[in-house]
Length: 323
Image (tube, rainbow, N blue to C red; front, side):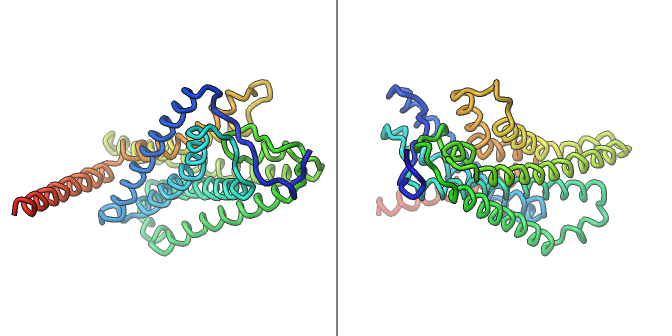
């Protein structure tokens, strides 16, 4: 038995015991993380460089890509390190940092998805007021509020969780530090305080979910009133990427934290945690780029420019060496 004052490290859940499977997990996570870094990096570059994407939705998409990059960089590198070197440990402060960053980024991402829903609502239901309600200053304030909310929320949860006495060992049943698994190590009834905070958080998240549902009910009612079939399709497919990302984020997170007890198993818990913490950062850029013609054009232009510049640089070096 140990307590939180004497803990120096935690033991994370290993993906597999066999060395071949550990290396397979390493290469799989490496491929996913590289794909996420490349895709989100391209979106960040495209939005920053193309003036056609200097819109409220482009601005919020840039912020969403930042949260996705942060999420993939918080959990995956440590999991890859443990799989490659056949270890399970994470330092106490490293665990604190993981918990803080994950809650911060997830809360900020959920807030941004709610704001992006409001953007779609105003664009379709109140198009004449779009420039007034979603001006550059208003967008900056909403994005700052999303990041600040995530920061304060993460600070509160992290401080509350790691102030609890931990005396049930140091083995976490997860491949990264997660609050429910840390609470299982508590030997005090004071974990009820964190449980109440989690219930309050779920209530806030449910409130945002109700807002998203209500907004899309109004959006679809407005879309159905558009006389042109082409106009209805265009308006619907404008909202489709956001709907897909919201569904992926909420469904995976809800099942991870609110799944029935009879569904519990270590292997299933591991799969679900990968689904909500690793896959969305890699899939979000793909979802948004599939239906956003302006974004696809900007990405195509960016990639073409990079290829042309690399070819010019190659020719320059070849001529230099020939001389």
